[in-house]
Amino acid sequence: MITLGVDIGSLTGKALVLKDGDILAWDVILTGPDSVETGTAVTNSVLQKAGLTLADMDFTVSTGYGRIVIPFSDKNVSEITCHAKGAHYFFPEARSILDMGGQDCKAIRCDETGKVTDFAMNDKCAAGAGRSMGIMAELVNVELEALGRLSLQAEGDGVPISSTCVVFARSEVITYLRTGVPKSDILAGACAALCTRVQALLRRVGTAPEFVISGGIAKNIGVVQRLEKQLGLTANIGFEPQIVGALGAAVIGRELLERRGSKKRRRREKN
Amino acid sequence: MLHAGLDMGSLWTKAVVLADGEIAGWHVMPSGESSRDTATAALAAALAPLKAVLGDVASVAATGAGKGEATQAGQANREATEVLCAARGLSHLHPEARGVIEIGGESTRVVRLDDQGGVLEFAKNDKCASGTGIFLDAMGKLMGVELGEMGPLSLTSTEDVQITSTCVVFAESEVVSQVHRQTPKQDILRGIHRSIAVRVHGLVNRLQLDGRTAMVIGGLALNSGILRCLEELMYTPLAVPDQPQIVTALGAALIASENPRGSSDAAAGGNA
Image 1 (cartoon, rainbow over the protein chains, first blue to last red):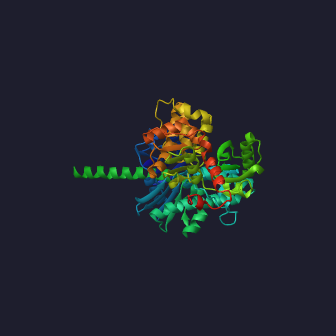
Image 2 (cartoon, rainbow over the protein chains, first blue to last red):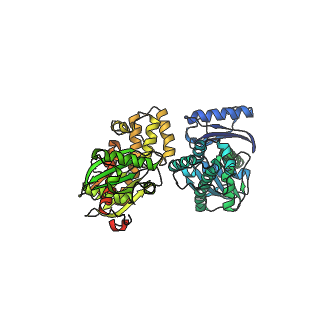
Image 3 (tube, each protein chain N blue to C red):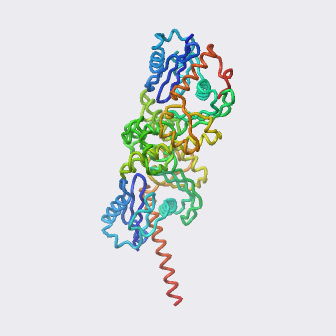
């Protein structure tokens, strides 16, 4: 049984092929202005990697904010459901998930099957989302990938960023840069500020000891380490945290097919 | 006797000079990198028509985001809060006003006034850029439309475009995708103006301000598109004083003239 998961986020598009429960291939690309094009491009790329075609897919599930427009999808499922399933695939013990993408942040609680039991979400304000880090990286002229590590060179949490709003924080950072504050101190302040927002969200649903971080933010060691310290927990992070949503989508596709199959079987047995 | 008020806003600096209680000069300029230089330049320009210099001024009161820096630099000898200055300035010009809606560069304030023009209650947003002038600035840059043209252009809109994001950062991406879709500029602009007006209206509602007796001040009061959207939301025409940008600086100047010794705000009407 082969299923495809496609996750169209605000900044990146992800696709993953699952065969009999094993990850066959996956890919992450930048989202273009057109969600259909992004979905098609990332799917073509992942199918090529797997040496398969769309016709080989038994079921396709789409998720993410562009999930509704994907033309070759058999079903679209909310990203919260998908992230819980995906995290559960990597870490079956996980009961608590933090997912942060470009434009939103979700704190999710789930049960032993990976089913969502509670969640809280911020998709209103960039201050608690990945985009804030992108903006800071641009301001201090550091690669987004290098930001987290650089922030750890600062002592503690660096300089405080007192504005909540990213637009206002931008002016604050410019003032810091002008007065010669080291980049590492500014980035430490930015990571610490983001952790504060994330913690407020986590508090709303509570955090279980088996804790997973997914989404682009999991690649930011500056945020992950600070959060671990504040929570007193060690975060579980998969080998590719950005594909958790697409993985969850593919897992859900597989589960749906299995359920349908068993229904058919029961019907056959009845007749 | 000369008195002056300085409103050190985040985007614009305003100075007003009073000669024996009457407005004798004023100046509006962009806030520069140094508060001291901007304050000096704004005061000098406002004093120019009187052929006077800073030394001739008996007392200067500063307000706005940079008020602390202005007093530290010695440009002002006392400070007053933005809310109090806005109330004092508006009720001097329009004693009949019972409410102030101030939409500035990085903050929005709404004040309810009593029969004497004193502050009864206020609400403000200085935490989030949505609903403030900097949002409009950012969008104007993005779309290549001059700040002064945005209002009139938005009034020609025929199609409703919804900007659903509250956050300016997210709204930016929304506007970009609208531009890509070749949505007419005027329709996008109207959507942007409406989004700002909705935030301001939230504050207005919180104070249950009556639109018939309130007036709009601050830089965005000069934008006809914002006014139209706010009027639609409040179901009433809204009045704007002449030179709505300098009302708060005028209030500061009045406070300087009433209380030249620099005693506390409490004497001049509470810690609003």
